[in-house]
Length: 127
Length: 113
Image (tube, rainbow over all chains, first blue to last red; front, top):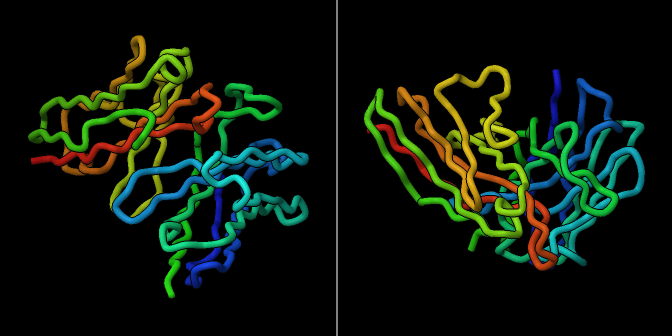
């Protein structure tokens, strides 16, 4: 069965960076895009970006441009999301989610709905 | 401020029918992009409820249905059950250069009375 297993909770100080992992299993890793979505306490869902695991290809929401980097390791079927220059407003649960087959092309990346989600990783930014 | 607009809350008694609206614009729902709905139970990850405007993944009860018209979409839940109490989010795509490619509604909290 499809599983997205995320790394554990993190506590960081303002100005630091955090790197969250998302290990995929139960399907061919390189065939499906991975998205990152975050949710601040008591707030809604916010899309951060997308990565194509089969080759170099990422796109980030404008809000996170310059602060977020998404990478992948095909040998371990793992996607990483690194967020730098952390501030208190970045305190949130960070989810990885798999893009379903098909979808809509924006540039060279295929955007689809999210058929499987990781359980989320709580990142707390506090001095 | 979410790109897609949902009511903050709706409620209904067990067995009743409720609907949740999702209003967008000409750059997202009105541009023809599909609408999805996700259900989020407290303390858990969102779960896909409706995709492609009106399609249910296997395992989702037929009590849940979706529709789309113009720049809006709706989620309907019939035969309301206590276990339906959750937050519901609509999601679509947006071609506006200043917006994210993926957009969500602000979420609607469903209370089963």
